[in-house]
Image 1 (spheres, rainbow, N blue to C red):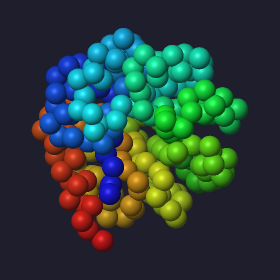
Image 2: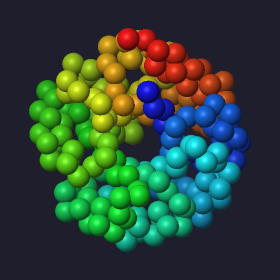
Image 3: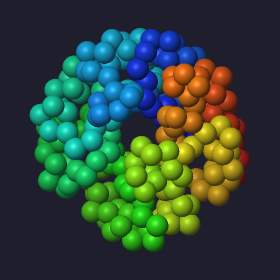
Image 4: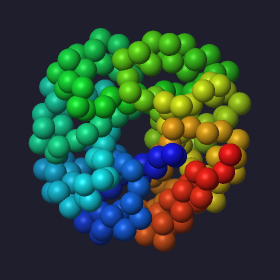
Length: 210
């Protein structure tokens, strides 16, 4: 089954739209961004999520104690690390959070692929998922598919995805799931229900294809 994460949620009507299209994960950004939410804001939004949609917290080079407190405040099920976090940080988080909270690590996929391939070996043993993003995570830049590793069974694909291109991309690679944010936003910068619905529908259709 191909999983879908819709990231960067920050207002109530986006939550209602997400509940309608039912992705597998809903992402909340706690790092500097126009989509940033406070733990209290996220907690109120997460309370309105359908229980089958798992809340993900996105952090960038944040202190481990702040991450742990945010997880407890919001009831996060997944912590997504999107900065330059090292193995020591991940080990500390794993010990503090236990097995009930998944840890995901986003990797910058360099143009030659070497950096990401090296990082795979370091992080895969400690993280539940890897996320392959563009050269600068959060930039909306598409990953060079030729530089992805052979197996993506435990990995998410992010960066530049949209209803217009996700179908073609999933013909070429088959990750664990896909992560979208700006690609399903409207001109006002908030999530567009029709674009979200179209994105999720396209991914679900690809699940039945060989």
